[in-house]
Length: 313
Image (cartoon, rainbow, N blue to C red; front, side, top):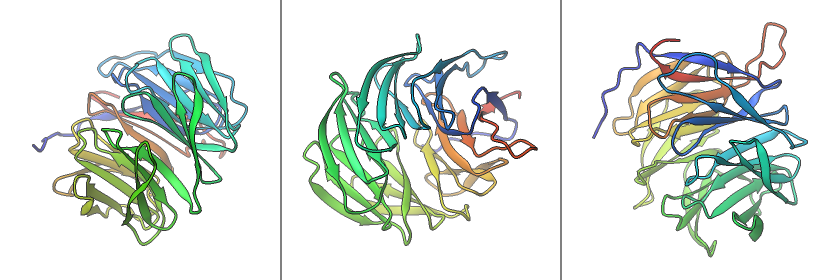
């Protein structure tokens, strides 16, 4: 089923609070709160009403001693969030109180974090291409694996039986889970694969590459069915919308591309002022959060993110 959505009359709103640039934005499972992680060593939780207006209160999550590079919400709990930082720790927070409830000290600078869809495990990737899987309840490592290739981004499929790694060699490594045995190596791109997104309906996954292309794959057959070619720079971030019919992708190009998954055609482009670090669709509405390397007129980091999809700015 293809959605006919008009993005023509929709606007973006800007949210400021961080002192340095925002690396990562993520929605909670019910789409009511957005978290932002920043180079300023904090994460912030914002209560967003898709049709609301006015001042948005935010809660600051303080404790990391280095950049908060990525964050992800518990897929089953709308107020639990995990953060990964260059300070070698992974922290679990309660978004209502802003308190850190669990902390794990790992071996390297953490750059990636993702939840297993059933909420039981968290996977963390670091700068040394090491993967650590944590049991969420005990918040202790249950698997550790160092890879002899550059690992960029990591994801489970929706059933949690497969684990994907994008690599600097242009491949996607598919492992079975929980054994972490290799199932498949997909020759996906001619340059490094940077980012991966899993369609929430479980049909597709997409890969963004340094070759500026986004490839779309059918999970059941592990076949590439389409490439999206609108961007001209390495693809840094991609996201499927809640129905799996739209994909957003961004890079150092000064726009975010929104394309129809089934036709490959661009349905909208959101202009932006800087290279993008993170785009993420709301899990319930066609509302897109995005954050990048925005600077003010004095060339200092702005520490802002924006949300597109409002009927008035």
